[in-house]
Amino acid sequence: MIAGYVLLIVAWAMSTPPFSGPDEWAHFLRAAGVSHGQVLGARVDSFHDPNLTPDQEAWTSRIVRRIDVPPGLAPDGFGCNAFQPTVSAVCTDRLPPPPRERVGRVTTTGNYHPAPYLLPGLVVRAGSGPVSALLLARLANGLIALALLALAAVALQPALLGLVVATTPMALFLAAVLNPSGLEIAGSIAFTCGLIGLAREQRSRFAWAAVTAGAATVCLSRFLGPIWVGSILAAWLVWIGLDRAWGVIAPARGKAVACAAIVSAAIALNRAWDFYFGPRPLPRTEPLSLALRQSIRWIPEWVREQIGVFQYLETPMPGAAYLVWFAVFAALVAFALRVGTGRDRLVLSVALAAALAVPVILNAVALRPIGWAVQGRHVLPLTVACPLLAGEIVWRTRRWPPTRAGRSIGLAVAASCAVVHFVGFYANARRSSVGTAGSWLFPLHPEWSPPLGWWPWLLLAAAGAALITAARPEPT
Image (cartoon, helix red, strand yellow):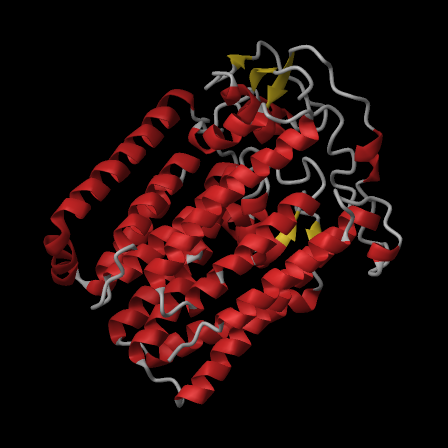
């Protein structure tokens, strides 16, 4: 299964047009700054963007920073087809070469936590231009995400059904572009899988490593990291009970103390950075009740975005792909609610309610005053706990049909998810090559092609999907 994720992430990284991930140009500038010691760029005296409203411009002016970009790496002109889904990425092949001297550029992610940019920043300067530097940074980002997913898998095995459903196409896409959300989501998956592994009678020797690495990554990736870690940890404590939790910690005090020290340090760094450099919300002018009602309407879109809406959030999959993934998730949760204990049902129900309520509250209180909206990727680190918990409840009860039927169910789930992974990759490739109004047979007559053309990456993605199917996460 991890081999399948490796192939898919490499295919995503190499075939997604340069700087077509969410805010990828801004994250690239952040990594370029970190690459030569600019942990925090210089403040910008005046900032103006005609595409923003006055409230958006006022908020953004607080977080923009000026970055000194090394010679030949300025990503000028990329994103020329942004928010134009019917337009291919061919315009990126016609851009003039970047300046050959050091230049200053403004990034809208200037105050983001520096940790996710350390490894990408180390490899950025090895690139001969912005495109090659970005590909190296993407692969570095993907390497960290893959390490976290591998930790999650070994901590959770042999019951991997929940992990297959939790690792959506959007999770892999974000791991394959330069964006801290990819690490935040992979870290949350590792953290949750590690906690589940610790709750078992036969604990994986990798469970503590998954908990530590996952929680630390989540806390060092984005501002809300400690909230996700605290929420998932609280649900775990309620799920297994304090007495059993102490029974987990007591025999492994050394590992528990080391884990607590590392995660506490990550939380302290997160809070300190947020206190000194974090954004400050704008005052809310509309009634809270109205803001909440308006935010509830976004729930279906957030669900779609968590499964997979790519590039600039304007590259969806065919509608059937969302139905398939959601049906698999809903069936897993429904079965867990049916066969679980009373405590299982309570914790899973609260987790599901939180997955729906948190983005509504976050949107109403924090983002609507600015004029923006929560994106599915922002809350996916919390949502992944739902399928992971449901999969564990189902496995623990052992109330599946006989072994052959149970294997068939595991194969059906893996195959369904694998097909959606490939469909998502193919839909994104079509948008990049000929636009969303172009032919589905785009590999035959592409307007834009990635390095080596389309066929190697399509075959690599198909092989990755096939490996996920071959893994057959058996629920028995």
